[in-house]
Length: 222
Image (cartoon, rainbow, N blue to C red):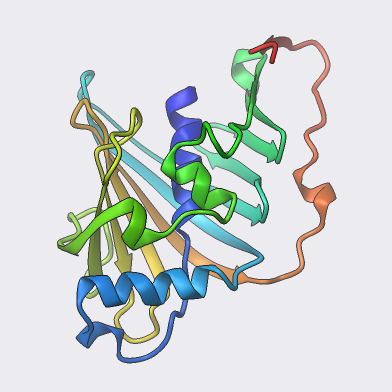
């Protein structure tokens, strides 16, 4: 559960769209700077997503779909709709993880800036691609869309939840079309995005979690 929530943070941190023209001729570092510049202007965004996971210790495979909403600073809502309903909500202070079939809600504290991992720093608007990652050109796997430019990001400080990231970006519009992470167990988590819209004016109430009746609540008590 915590791994999936961390993956959500990673994705929120790196959803960047339409950084400018001519980026396909730029170096990886210049490309990252253009993406960072655009990300700094994004106040909120919404998108449909498909999540694919392969490999790992259990050698499992899964494919899920849903919708994501994000608003700076620190607010997000991931609604998985198929094949199983799941909800992950951050109101900027607490992160709520809910799978209806389990009848359980896990509540954790959103890390403070001085305790946050690199993805969480991006979520708070405090990260920088070239500062926090070693950036190079990469190649997306078959799980990500063809015809995209791939940017590989390796965190300069070791992260518990992932070893590297790949951004797959449309070379013409610089719209983010996919993101892929590799964890320490060798599992690959890929997200494909569609209908991505930025600065749509999301309300704070979109990130309020209503506790369902009759569920067990597990908290970190911080």
